Image (cartoon, rainbow, N blue to C red; front, side):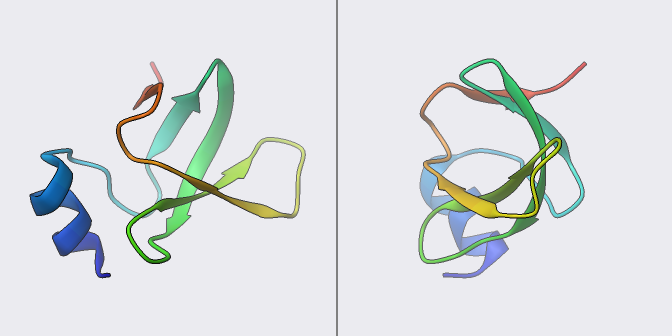
Length: 60
């Protein structure tokens, strides 16, 4: 699923490079695998799949 499709399906506005907080952990959106956000959390090399509506918010 593309980034645009994730934004449309879940009514969210995340883009590659956005800083996000997922359940309190900070990271960067790097991809959109399937219908998820691919987030690289700070201090990690691994990309984690995160559901776009589960405890995800833009980091301030």
